[in-house]
Length: 188
Image (cartoon, rainbow, N blue to C red; front, side):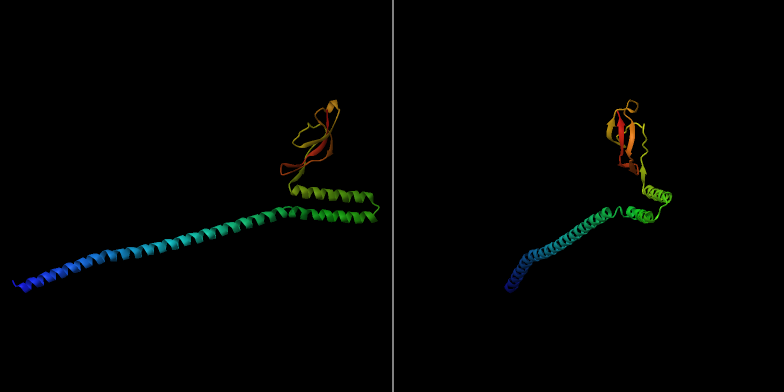
């Protein structure tokens, strides 16, 4: 072997070792750069996902707020207009009373006026019954019941002790709920 061959081999080995060392140094740098890129991409994806969730939350909150406002508005309208149907059904009775007053001025027929008044009264009772309003059945001699009676006074009466002596004002119920108690005189 020749010295020049030995020198060349040594030079080649040195170059090979240098290139391996450089490659070894560059590989972690390349891996670090790849990891940084992946990390930046992951951060960007997470940021985008977070923005998406925030947008969904805001839209859902706005939708719920609109629902709440609409419900409150509808409820207010319902409360304000709840009696509309009842009042509309009572208007014909008011018209009948006005016609009866006009007819009473010119008429001398008392029986005709009484009959007209009775017809209007029956019409009003029918309208109320159609709406679920019924008169409470209270008669003198009935036992006093605080659930349907309101005692306006007490009078001494041994035979009607604790019982209704007189009905001053009729009571009414709406669908099994008392809306006005019967005002009665009670014996003691």
